Image 1 (spheres, one colour):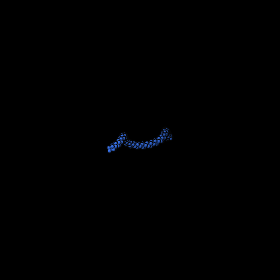
Image 2 (cartoon, helix red, strand yellow; image 1 turned 135 degrees about the vertical axis):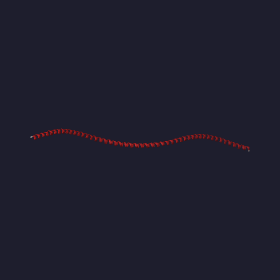
Image 3 (tube, one colour; image 1 turned 60 degrees about the vertical axis):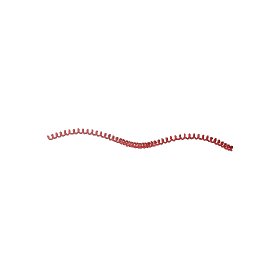
Image 4 (cartoon, helix red, strand yellow; image 1 turned 120 degrees about the vertical axis):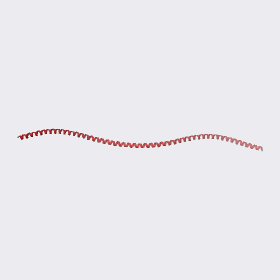
Length: 177
């Protein structure tokens, strides 16, 4: 009986110890469940954050793609603008070269014009000189014509007088004979 009593006490102690262990385990289980709930809540929060981050990632990827497209478009526009500027620079150089050639031709034409102007001035002077000479010659010709008329008149008078003198001479010769 003692053995049963001892066994009962041992069992009671085992039961108390098991109950204490069960209480401890229940407390630990409750703590574990609370921690598990907290972890699950943290996991849900993390999943929400992950979903938000993935959404933000997709949005940012789309924005990045649009920015890359815009950058490519701007680079194309820049390349086109650079090529247009290069073409315009070449055109400006060609125009400057044409301008230089035109200026050279203009200078040559100006020098030829100056020479032609001098030649024209000389020709005008010569023309005036020749006109003056022509007027002088005309005046001289008028004078000579007048002198010729006077000389003819004198010659006619002289012829008339010569004829008269010849007649008189012939008459005097006849009288003399």
